[in-house]
Length: 95
Image (cartoon, rainbow, N blue to C red; front, side, top):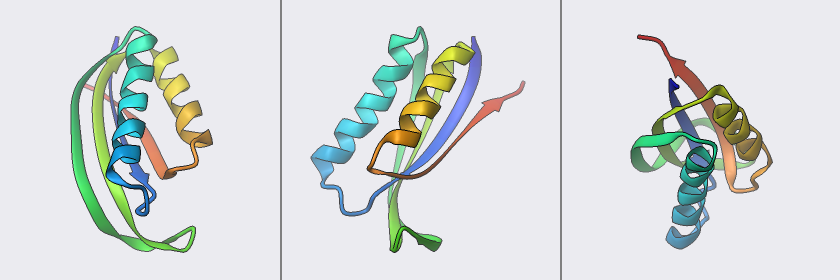
């Protein structure tokens, strides 16, 4: 299993319940593929450096997890097709 960190920016107009449901959904995807989420940091709503889809703000979330490469690929696929996600990045942490 490898260590990964992902940061994603959710749409700022999502209410608290919907954003919490998305965060739980992404953590569940990692767990379903044999991974383990070690930490989720909710940074909250922050100003973006530039407009993304006509938005000046976004809800930032950082998630660290241990998982096989297949879990990271599946998470990337789901993040790409989810409507509430403005941007995301997944990086592998090297020791």
